[in-house]
Length: 352
Image 1 (cartoon, rainbow, N blue to C red):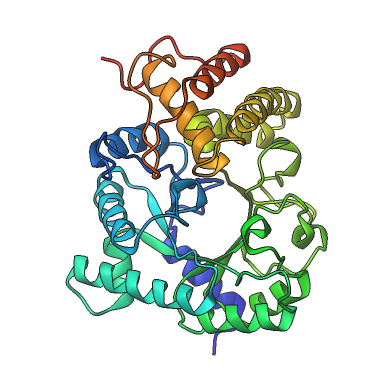
Image 2: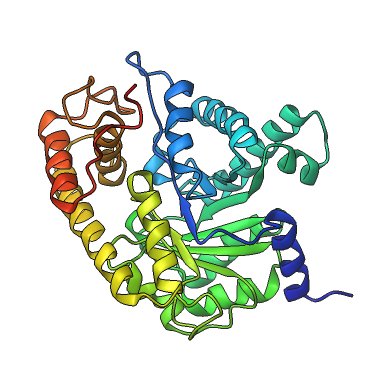
């Protein structure tokens, strides 16, 4: 009988016949002037982003995953399923919820959606038809939770047998999954195929746990090039790739940085990484004080707006999930930072 590692390898090969992308992205969610989900604007953004980031987490924290209503999530997934079939990217379905039981129910509800879209009761065929590579869940929220409680909650979700990525997100959950717990989950569940860590402490990869074919991606922003493993494998204490909110704006440049690093041009990769890092830090700092949304979503909306229109003031400000418009100061800061970093285009991707 095939072992866990073989089953995981076979699963990843079915999900990504050409190999798992090194760059993934949680795309921002676009709204029209009335606050409804904007399918046209989403498609335009994906046409720019998806050629460089071939797997997208929908909805992640950057995509308002903690704020969207269940109905909005379903509609957003319908939009992306249609666009993904046309553009050829894969979808990681976010099932982010502070309560593990609710997260498990969200996974099953979203699976039912894809079964309905595909017209089949078979889970694997339904997910394949909508280009879904699995579900992404966090550990349960609570600063006082024990590691045993965190592990038990994740096991109940992984027991569903569906392709799953586990997301280390202490900024929201107020706790961290320990390396020992993560290693036990990897050993026990072949459907656990990816781990994303946005903690910035990187405790799991630093611990050098046995990965057993699991893909590890870094979600923390900044210092990009120094965390990337070599293409043919490196010490265990590196990442296989990135799942970055900043890919909403920098997908072409992040993909180029990865190519430079893996071709041996470490200085070129570090130079490009440093310029992106400066822009990200400046715009995220400007977005941090806003009283609505989260800095990841707001900063990336500002950067994408400037890149789409070639400037801060060439189109109405983007609408956020709260209904508020991004302030002119944030948009201007994004334009200044992009220009200083050498990333401001002569023409935005939405300009005709």
